[in-house]
Length: 118
Length: 110
Image 1 (cartoon, each protein chain N blue to C red):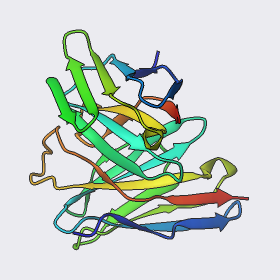
Image 2: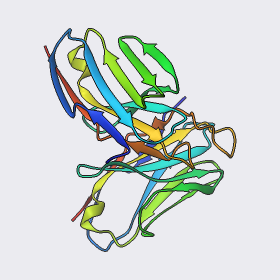
Image 3: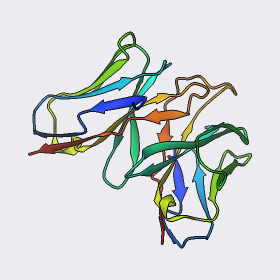
Image 4: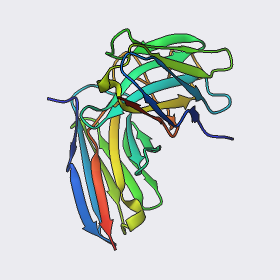
């Protein structure tokens, strides 16, 4: 099976612009989670999607949004970019066979998208 | 105080040494994850455990639920084990809503 893929891998934007990142999960996986990693804050949970619905959300401003399509592919969008949004954005998928989640699921991570905001 | 604390933050050792990385957490959990991140950013899930001990090759992970503590051990360490090791626990309300430790940067010298 192919692993989790993310596009693009690298991106440079300027303040005020918006950006859309894409994540294709492992075939058959229904849950996609997004994480932000910065040197100062480390890894932080952004949100999780399951069956096209946002199931969980982290503590990020409304400028960060996402969606999931019927084929489980997911996109995240950041509007009005700020310098502090420069980060590695990782997505991870898991099988998640039930809508409630098992509490014990291995996460399969993609390679990440490195975003630089100038 | 962070919900997930790792120690040490940095660890340098010689090839062949036995390595231990510790993780303490303050929240109730259903499972704890150990992750490995190589330079370049890619993250690999090493273990997910909710009790006892798991072993995969030279890597061993243990957890003590009562003491809210987990350890990751590497036997016969090798330079290719050099990476950042991160523990993570699910926050209440979501299996995938992980809270991460700050990571332990491990360097194994030949």
